[in-house]
Length: 315
Image (cartoon, rainbow, N blue to C red; front, side, top):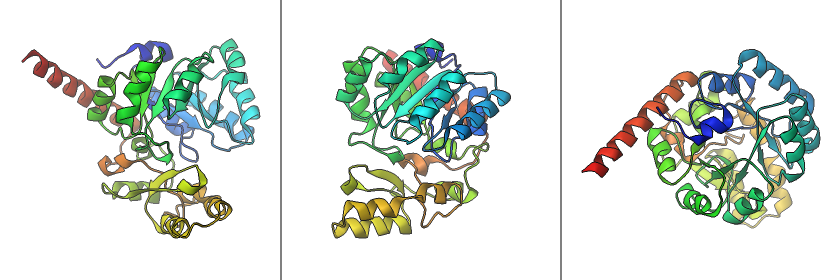
């Protein structure tokens, strides 16, 4: 059975986390992943605290298994959302875009595990010193905001640099990717794009359709000039970004173009002028399936790969 120390740390059956994606990862998806033995995560983005509390309570009604909440520390509601997370005694808190250090004490008091997302060795070392429980190490193959290094080179460097568990993310979409992450020294994986096409994901159907049709070179990185590059599926919006960046448009103009575009895609279904954030593994996703089936197949394929590699080693 596919099991690592991460499973004991988080109280889950399989070392598979579902990414906390804004406007995508709600209570229904998170609960379905947790019920299937992974760790479902509610994505808060810039949502207000009342919405977050509602989603947490809905997830509690749908599952008795542990689930998490992702908090974007640059959100104007970050402080209030963290208070809600503490009050609701969420089992796991993942964080992005900042240092969760000042919240760790309060989260520890309610037994929450704290796992930041990192994209560099320096940040990983710094956050380990704050007392976090593990790190999600995300390569640039992932959808949404990205760093500069690939998962293949970043994960082993951070595994060597820290003593806490490492969870690999970015470019992982099947059991072969999970096995590769384990080979690099990670104790688990986080997957976002694959779970967008879970049956329980309430994202607009046109987004799922666009992912299912994606080919190997259909993602593009925009916003490099802003210092906050984003990977998403190529469409009319990305071409607008490319045109602005080619003529070295002011950062303010680029930022204005991106306002509200994630919601436009994920909620309203505008897959041409909205931001369809998805990773490079979109090309591997070919079916919409229940979260339970996705995880069952991931586990079976990973175990098959590991057995094959074991036989190769014996030979």
